[in-house]
Image (cartoon, rainbow, N blue to C red):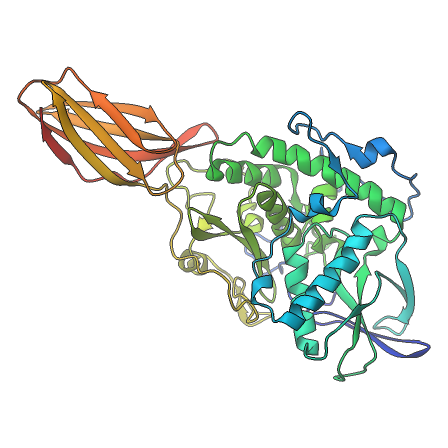
Length: 471
């Protein structure tokens, strides 16, 4: 992919005049304009979880054991069949799908069905002979043809293919290149051939890669499921990605623009990727954990949005990975080293970089994200929304409270005169705590805050205002 052009056209002939060109290549990779650009050039040393698959490799048909194997760390009795589409669908999202017209949904569904056929089987990709931009012979590997409804414009085909690619990161063998048939130039396109990357055009290689992705993903998920809250699960996923994935650069220190690095396979299998791979891997894992997560693209970048307690937050693992520090600041969840973790649109813009190549800030969403959810606030642990005190006897009081979101406990601070005390109560819901042995006839002042546990550290909400009760 050339850096100065967001669309790449490949022309050729196949019986009749065919035109092969890519769908809108809007999220190709981060550019060298990112301030920390050259700090983690890949040194070629294999990471612990990197698996190398040669594009010319010959692998045997996966055994029945490989097709249906208990994943490492999975729940007892849980088995996964890599040929079962329902297994792969749990990594996807349909957030943007709901905004499509009926004809656009038909195109989206048919496109997915074409890719699912290659995700769940070992058939080899079809071949189309063409020429590249330099007029040199080139072979495109594709899935079967997908019809484009009459009402879906060429521009919408490009946009829908991009939306589909990022909503379905399980299609690790596909980057939204398409071979458009029955039209030249700006003529209406009637057919699309989704392209399969060269590395995975052989069915045996692709199935072996699918099996290895399944095994690694289930390993990641097993670790994340140990988290007691959505925030803790998310922080584990963030830590795992930052620890095992590196940003991929060319030998000259510039961003690597090869198509492979735009896929989830580059991050999961090889441990080397660009923003697209970080984004897709994060979305795969969080959606599998049943946490609503979407991807957003600009003309030069990709990142995520995640929903917690009914609110949306920006997450940019690529930019949060600048110094390989996997620790979250437990007192400032949205700040310090984790500067792109669960932040608002406003905070993201304040921390953004300008892309002179595109003429926009790196995190300026493309205009076809018409229903992208707004991220209104930086994340904070949900504070108590109710707090009541009641005298229950001489020198005794009862404290009840509830929180406005997912928590793991409460911290209670109270004082009688000059004496103070702090106690904690583990709870994922409402609080009901009786405190005794208080000085009779005195007024007790009480305030509360909630907490979550992240990487062994408690992260607290803001305090409530003081409540008073005479005991």
